[in-house]
Amino acid sequence: MDKRIELSQKLITKDPSTLNMVIGFDGFVDEIIHVVDKRMDSEHFTRVDTISQLADRIQKASGLSTNIELVSTYKKIGGNGPIMCNALAINKPAMSYIGALGFPTIDDVFSVMEDAVDLYSIATNGHTDALEFDDGKLLLGKMSTLNDVTYERLLEEVGLDKLIQLLSEANLFASVNWSMLPNMTDIYKKLLEHVLPQLPASSTPRYMFIDLADPEKREDDEVQRLLSMLKEFSKYYVVVLGLNKKEAYDVAGVLELFDKTSLENMQISLEDLNQALYEFLEIGAVVIHPVDRSCCVVDGVFYEELGPYIAKPKLSTGAGDNFNAGFMLGMLLGVTPDEALLCGMSTSGFYVRNARSPRFDELIVFMNDWANNTI
Image 1 (cartoon, rainbow, N blue to C red):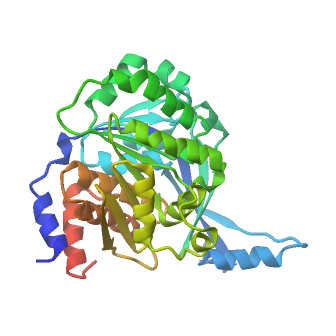
Image 2 (cartoon, one colour; image 1 turned 30 degrees about the horizontal axis):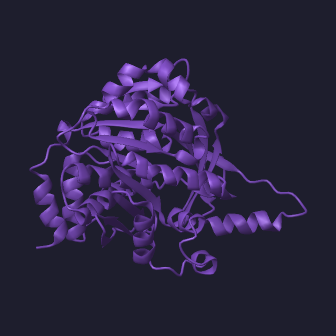
């Protein structure tokens, strides 16, 4: 029997609404934008299809000037945390989100989350202009307000006792978008010092998911300091580090796990890369999700699965966050790591085709359709 069909049958017996999750700490309003190539009239235009085409146009303007028209298609919740939260909240677990959702009042864009999520906003949200292309996306972020995401603001708006209660009850604590939160390492340090030692023992494993979100923009010593802290969280959690392909090579470079030329040319195999990161970090799992597949090392064992690639996605911004949501949902529901990879890729595969996250029943149907080549 096809592994995806077997997994879908297994998932029918699971109930994600029994889970409890806490996610943080970023928050953006994403404005999805198309770049105009040729405009026919006031309503019709052709798009610049690829990043390389845009790069060529910009290059030709060097030393001169040019005008590039941007068309805003719609606004949506953004930031790694809210998108991951939204993808999980659709299955109605007990869910709390702590982050930059607007301050002192929550931005209207995040109102779609209010019915399913307990929201704790501690700062004004950032704003992302998401330029989408067939071969990727350019995310232009305005995020000075994220400087206000601090441990002190966390205590002011949530409270120490409430924070301890939330983390005590949660099966999953996901902390994402480290690179855009300048004070996140300090928050981690103070959580380790003041909060996590107060959590009561749990009869079931607690998971902590961490996503760095493009660490290239931070100094190498900052990345190294953050990565050195992950092992400390293992006293309280099964720690899972999630990376896309570029981030995995960048982190391996910062840690000097391979020679620079091999990393820059991406000559290291995914398995060797994944295994090296896992062995160096000494945490519960490292998962890597390129565009066409995903892999992970859990308990020292490497797993890899091919994904349902689509050349022209309906929406790509947020696909990685949906993969993370699906992967962690699988891990929390007790499926095997390779099956969790399939959960992640089915979640992101549905998302890029439908511009929304799947309900649990839709996730199961998608797996069957994927197995039958009907997606």
